[in-house]
Length: 360
Image 1 (cartoon, one colour):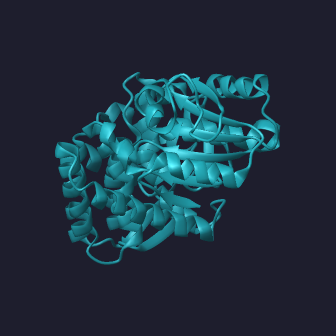
Image 2 (cartoon, one colour; image 1 turned 60 degrees about the horizontal axis):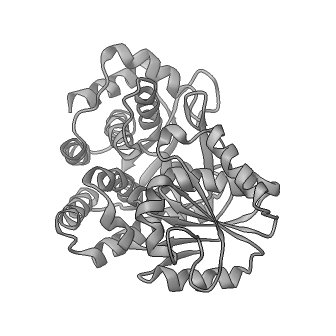
């Protein structure tokens, strides 16, 4: 269940009482422990909410720590602190925390219940919802994981006040994607309105209620798609718009030790995949120009060069959407809301899309 709240402590009292776990654990990283845990708990020394007690598990921050070593740390903490199949794990943090925490919950004792409390915009509109969990492995994004649905996802816009501009932009990229796959009219205008609203919020903290409404609307688009296809056999693949190119860019830059936030890579990926949509499935030039202009203005130039194309293509061949080892599959659009799944493109056309990204 998706729950939107302005009183996180009261909401957590209610939802945890309804679950009735024998033990409760709170997973956070070193940043959310400092910045977000105080909003949630009685003190920074305990994970006790008003009305119940629990244990705290803290992990290192950052996508480079989204790995088997960190997952093992969580497993070990759960085991040593007496977690059972009837325990509850609460993931308080961004996408790294919700992905690792969800995978730990999916695999510990063959599955325990968990709640996601996303604290970044990206986690709110993407990672925390839908039941995809996992870790990076062998240099590949989300290579190992499981589908395991949370009991609840609790959205509290107050957490967003601590985010910098870059992290708000990272989350906004996924919201832009939801607009493109979920709307058949005025998609570019809605993308512009979203950008203006979040800019006002970042600059002055204004329009928090409007931000909360836009977040809930964006999550609702993903929620409806996931309900139709929980394990990504069909329409849920639409949520991967921008991700075939984007994940390859993200993995490449991680290899180069110049990592970027996930949403930036997805934004650049969308620019390339909108180009492919134009040449392959007839996406209108007005949408192509309007959407890619806005994305380019917001996210700046993509730091890849021509010498990176072969490695990017190799990374794309590992994408989980592929059904064969020698073809890269994309989600493309014939128009906003008119989604085309399982599209392929020849290597030369993919390189054209990379050119298009670099030229913006």
